[in-house]
Structure formats: structure tokens, C-alpha cells
Image 1 (cartoon, rainbow, N blue to C red):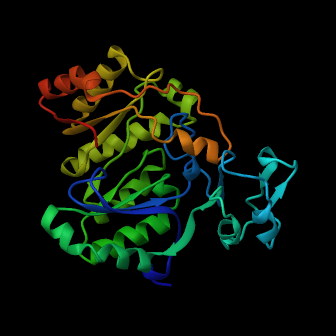
Image 2 (tube, rainbow, N blue to C red):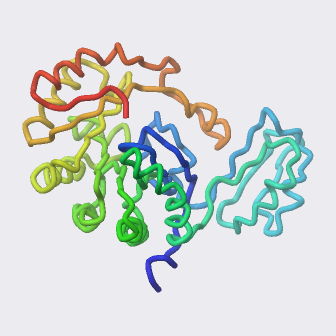
Image 3 (cartoon, one colour):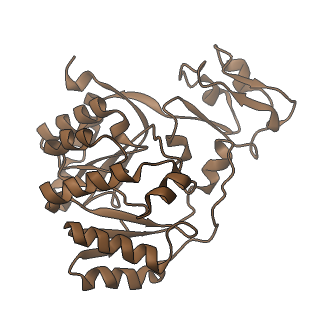
Length: 307
């Protein structure tokens, strides 16, 4: 099987994006992430299995979705919208439930696509990439949870002459980062905290692996790397932590940093997937991060507030 035939579970494809790498880009969001960041803007991306978004506020409990499902993946245990239940293991991703709901209360999030179809879609906008310095970004979820599929997509795009970017949390075995390196023009990964124990406690992540990957990138391809720091109230939004993070990055040779202000754009998705959003509901603005931006500049780094 060639790269074009490799299948990926895709959450969404966004064309004409301008915040996921340089220029105008096509962003492929893959499903699956082992971290459980409580501020995650895409909670539906975390599971590798199909996810049904159910808006209880729109649902009238007509049960049309359940009746349309040939595998009984959807059931109702009560006669109102609170009784909606979804069994991902039974779902065949036929989308019949979604089509049956006249009130747009049900949405199947994610679908299987081949590398070939994704690259062909990206190539439709090649003229825009040429004019703006854009290309294809592979995001998630965490793309390197599927190293073979992500490698196939990046390699096929790269061989088609498309500029490529990879967004990652870097909490994966280092060899996966190294392996995709020849096919990545821009590494856009996160450093979420400097404290390894707190990182694990809050997100479930292994910060030692994150730091190992960033060190390797800084030593081997620093010109390709932008490190993103998502600034999160109640997690890392304090002077000591942010100064330490920026100072650590500078010390290992990272040239560019992006400070990403906390936002709440994903809150509505938590209702869809039946989860509570526990972090603050007040976003940060660019001005809140100005002093840290200036600190990075004072160290001689390239710094930007926002992606």
C-alpha cells in the first residue's frame, strides 16, 4: 500500500487558515490525543473512536437518531434529552443519525479519509500557498499518536511541493519526532509548563519527553521551530512560571516563541460531548501577555503574541 492509500481518522479540515503556520494554509485536524488538558478547545479530538456531539438544548427527544442507527449505537434511557446515550464501539460512522435529526442536535465528529484525498484537497489552493508562503499543517489531537499515518501525509505533501507544518504536544517517543523531520518545514509544538510534576498532575502528560523533543529540535533544526506557550490562568499564568519557561527555551537555543492567550472558544463543545468545562470563562487579551513578550525580545528571541 502506497502513502496515498493510507487512512487517517480526521476530525476536520480547515481551508484558508491563517493561524497555524505561515501564510494561507490547509489544516488537517487528526483525532486522538492522550493528554487531558482541562482547557482543551477541541475535546472531541481526544478520543480515537467516533464521537457524537449531542446538543441537549436542541434535542426534543424524538429519538429519530436512535431509530436511524442500524447498529443501535444510540439509545435513550429516559424520555427527554438527558436520556441520550452513545456507544462508540458500535458506531460504524454511517452518519444516518446525523441526517435523521431535523433539529441539528446530533453531529458525528470525525471521519476516515485517505492521504491521497487530503493532499489532493490541499493542492486545490496551491496558488494561495505560492502567493502567501503557506501550505499544509497537520494538527490534532496529537498527530504523532499515529506516526505512520502522519508520516505518510507529510511525505506525500512534501513530495507534491507543499510547504508542511506539524503541530504537536511533543509528548511522544523522540524517534517519532526525528522520523518526520525530513518532511516538516515548520515544527509548531507546545511547551505547556516548566514543572514536570504539575504538567503530569493537570494534563496527564510526560514533560520530560516534551523537553527532550524540544532540545533535539533546538540542536538539530532550530530554524524550523516555533515553540508555542499556551498561557492558561490557574495553570501557568504567573510571572515566575512564564519567565522560567521563556528563559529555559532561550537557554537551549530556541529562536522563536509564540505566546497564546487563553480563550474560551471551545466551551460549547463540552456540552456537545457531555462534559463540564471547569476552567475560567474569562479570556486573556494580548495586553495581558505584553510583559512576557517584551522579556522574550530582550533575550534576543523572536516573539509574537498569538499563533
